Length: 228
Image (cartoon, rainbow, N blue to C red; front, side, top):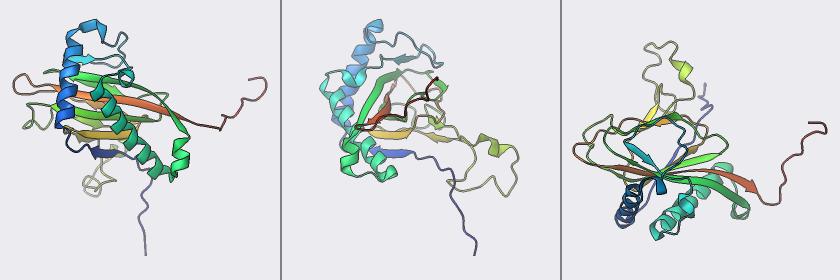
């Protein structure tokens, strides 16, 4: 009997924060207030292609003392460590030795805002948390976090034997309309983008994102050979 091997899978983790309304309202108010102060909180050196309808903060968000930000950080870290433990079969004592370094920020997106294709070099895990996405519920293409298949060459030839492949073998990218309170974790190397946000009226799309890398306490990296 033949068997199917699920090869080269990419782990994408989705988790929802229960009773998130109060926290999200506090985050929304705080982030809009920060945005209104312009350059004081803005990323001074934006890199990935975007337009003026998208505000990006400095990359130190999870170091700020705002209570809502601290609560969100703790939620993100708890779920990230849980995912790492499950995927690597690490016990709690090993996870406690994994020391995290990070960069973190928020986006406030108005109508027409988008974020170009990118990944996050020099990090291992990234995440996006949705504070709100307002006014585009009936627009299937608006403000989608879209993961681009690392196997894009599988579309070099498509016929009836391949164009309806079921997950995880499907062709093309994976678009997600984030829901308030949803956290998505993914490998930092995975290319992704956010399609143009097109709400009815003055709705906002607000997200928090982060990149992380880790060092196992007590384990030194290998030394380079002499002469290099």
